[in-house]
Length: 69
Image 1 (tube, one colour):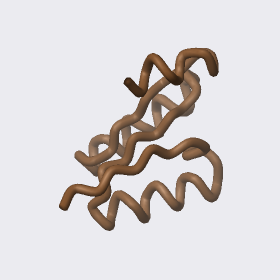
Image 2: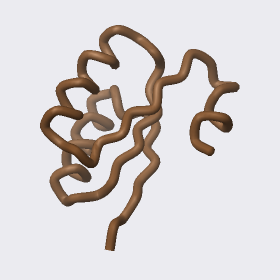
Image 3: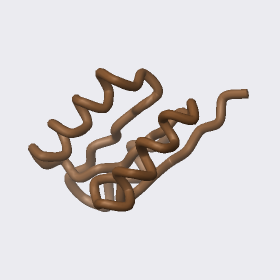
Image 4: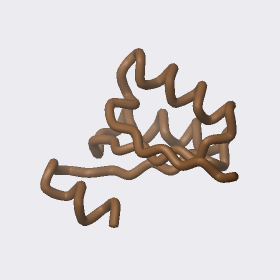
């Protein structure tokens, strides 16, 4: 079974650790992140290590509904 998780707050201390834990447990992780250089760099590293990591970058909170559809 392929379990999917939609995660917000994955760039904070707890969120980073939770994201890594879920990725190691083979969850398909979709992380909503603000479109900042730091988040893009960190996400790039995670994406290289875990194929089940899917970052979703937003510029504004209003974009969330459109992005996750």
